[in-house]
Figure 1 (cartoon, rainbow, N blue to C red):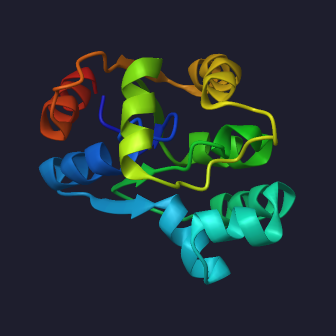
Figure 2 (cartoon, rainbow, N blue to C red):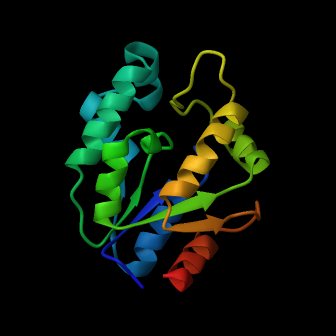
Figure 3 (spheres, helix red, strand yellow):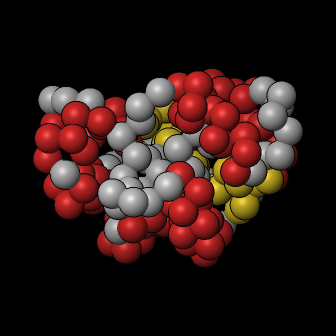
Length: 167
């Protein structure tokens, strides 16, 4: 059943923004990216926030952005670390249906390597693989729907089509 808002969660590189734009267009919904809201609020890129202000500041700002979020008839792409905010995730659950884009680690790593710095929140000795192992069960726990995205060549439009069929 289609809900008022659809919220995409998942790892950096999962395609939340790209799929989100395709899905919003298909449904005639607005599109919102919480990473864009963070950048706008901080007046610096995600990577600059991490480099200049640190992870604690980043997470506090991310939670504030989530808690201020109001939307109707929207597809919302979230940052990969939103799952670390209990209050933020509860607010997102109240806003709509949480869909986890479950992409295999190897595909994610290739995308992240291709796209360059992303402002990924991680400890000094934490690898992308470590983050993936830590976050995957948390994404699954929060998601109303887990969508396996195992085909590297599947287009954002095809994934959006699958989401619409699931709803």
